[in-house]
Length: 595
Image 1 (cartoon, rainbow, N blue to C red):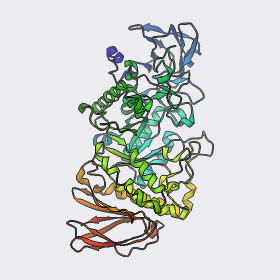
Image 2: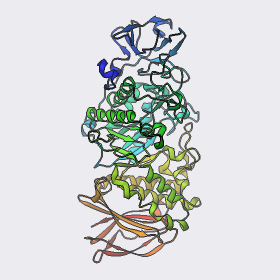
Image 3: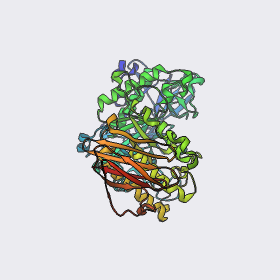
Image 4: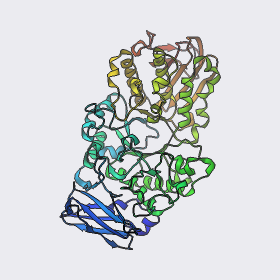
């Protein structure tokens, strides 16, 4: 290992040196603990008796070789503080961990699985000019073998259920909520104890590798949530690892996050190398196609509050990490969950930006959902909540998210957020989703949104698949499938997402009628999207399109097959001098191909 690089926060491969590394007849264990007075290795192979670890290199690293240590065996480090008290810790660089509430690390051999995804990796891109339709998934609650909260499918088992579903319903990427080990189910993986350990809830490292490999062999990319901001307070993990604040701030005012967890001290080179190596680990060893970084605003600003000022060392860290990851993995996707207006989040790091490929458009999400919560009588005065997103859209490369955060903690599900009674929600939801998929920017939907889940998400229960026995939900599910497939197969929806010529308002001044229309353009395709978000039919809506002779209908949200009221008898509309007149159902949307 490059020790100078480790201390200065420059390396991305610290896990090759630190952690447990199986050899022919045993394993070598190394840990970084400069504040410890003594460290002993304990494990199955020592009968949980202490085996002395020795200071090596500059005296800040500890090492020992255990002859009988084999993959699959458990171990811990017994770390003695300067006052000679001790505590047993899991390995910060361990590649596996026990199922909670147990806390031992597990020896894993990362070469136990052989990937067969070379063709996928060769053709993989960052999708800037390609469709990116992401299905966000919590691994333990998409489907469950039983009603027991801690009964889960393994990585391999879920692959056989999930992959056919994603392919049939038009999702080409899956985003997994954090799979790094965490002790509390309710944290959803965002409070980690094992940054290099895939959670044992769903199986082994090799089984997760197989899951990713199977996705790739079916042309599905895999994005993983990564948490570079904070970590769990549990005493057996990173907190006060060597008897000192090794990974966290020593001061409570900046050392504790709003979630009660420990904030990483990003000014320390050892911490920077730890996090850079963890991010690279998932991309390299598991062939993950992208990383979504959580709570980036809490790194940009102290405690996430602009009034406290910019955390310059954390910003520099983000920039350096993203630049290094893109050099190592040019086609991997790096996306930021960031609700701030901090400039240059998706500008290349070489140009002074943060170097992300995509930024979640939280403004679009909040404004759009607020609009659809609003009663139709108030929508005229809120009309430009839906036009505002295009005022700032080209400042960054945005992704439109409807994530897990929008369907929990009393916020209601996406379908529930629509104004009105049960029957009134469905036509609005169909029109809402057509607006989302025609709007520039890549797409992300949390599981259950696509069939109109009515119960807020609970990590202990599988999604309410039985709701599909109700015809209106089944029709909505079918609508979302057709919308997804349409998006994937029409370049006008994605090819020029980040070019001004890819989007043009046709009409955004129908405030009293709540009508909107715009055009999406690709090199060889033009698509017209028309919306009526009022609760009244809008007759005699005049359209004037340049260089257009005919409209061919691609999708209509009010079609009877999707639970709507309109039966379409023809698919084409001929234009006279580029002009036509439309009649729009209440709460409806329609796409036309312009010829």
